[in-house]
Image (cartoon, rainbow, N blue to C red; front, side):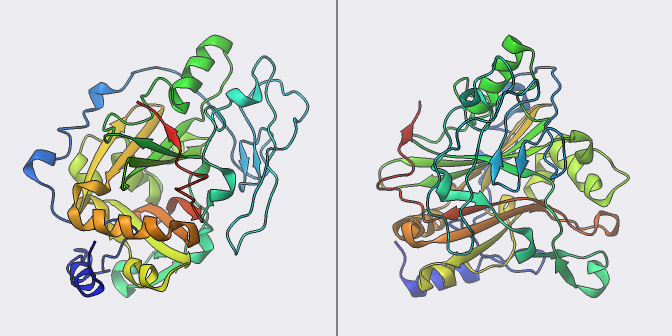
Length: 362
């Protein structure tokens, strides 16, 4: 654990090359070691190469709604049965109302077998999608006027969040694990010929070193039309296509950006975290698991000693914290602007000692 003075010195050195500053949530930074170069520990070849298509609507007016805001979770396409009983709902963070979430399932598929709910996600009151209106991103003319603007709607919708404890960090990821939600969905698609998995899934896997176990906080974001990621006629597509489907891990390392924010919580943690954007891949080790159906980004917070100390501090106050983490791709060329938010995760008063993070896998 670092003292407040040493922590200040540590954070002062974490400045991004873009000049925007570097302050993070539970993550600190050091250059990548030679043993951890991009691509060495996360070759795309380890991913299953399945050729399937899927489409799940996430727009508010879509006929088959996968997720509206985050008040309702709906499962795969198909002939839908009548709505089932609402899921239990608990207390949320101070700035968001309580919404009951219900599940409906297509014929021959139990609601509990849906992508969002198979396996059971983290306690629903502990997570939700961050509101993009609380964040600013680089505007259309940022390279000339350095002006940032309120972010528009996110590209992806948050559909599930898992907090899983393991003995050792799982660098093989969760999207390829046979007992986790992506592979369960793919298996169910083969068995039922129904569309279970969204068109494309982006999983952000934060590796958090705890006192007794390593936690994987895996947030799953879904998009109903993958073409938005590959359309190079749009500013977003010009940066998204090489990030999600290109071959350069070096490009990914210098492009993925986090904007953190403590919505409510301890003053010491709030000051340590700040709210400045951070290019994580230039500071901590990142690993990439890629497939035509999904993209998993593993952020190895434990790869840096300073990061480990900050995380342990934050975990100690987690039950009283409301934390936003907004994910996006940094645009450095004029034809890539304005920036767009990929998606955001809000963690509400996570109770590691009791209600949350108790699931274990091997």
